[in-house]
Image (cartoon, rainbow, N blue to C red; front, side, top):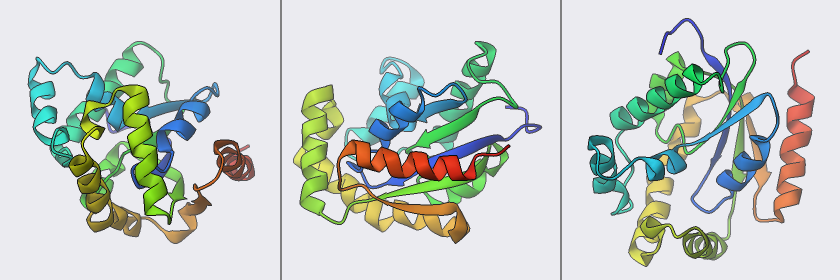
Length: 200
């Protein structure tokens, strides 16, 4: 991707099961926002190709896809959206879910994105989050989330590695949201904050 343009970006951040995908899908319906979920991208890559085989080696065990591979897939997807004119510089803001997932990845993505807001979707009830993951796995037939061992590893990885990603960004960019509520209540908090920071 040409480094001349960095897309303004909203990051939905939180542990697995916190509702990043649900909120991102709703926000992505707005005409000036483009939702991009790395988890969805990973699942859509054909498993018969080189990228797909690489991804499968990690996701099948609940491990994070390495930064380099994640960035290559992210950049390729941005290029495809731009070629299809579904993502236009100076017009669209990205809504990112599942990216960045490490401190180093956040640093490396600076050449792609200009983060204007981070919504930290917080769930303190671990049992509730695990229940959400199990329900989602059944509802969406996510084979990578069917295993209890994989779910436990994802949650552990989030707390041990991913949570530290927030340290990269200034505190004033981070807006904490209690995600252990009804989806509509969480959405209201996000929408009210976005309305307050909307640029003229």
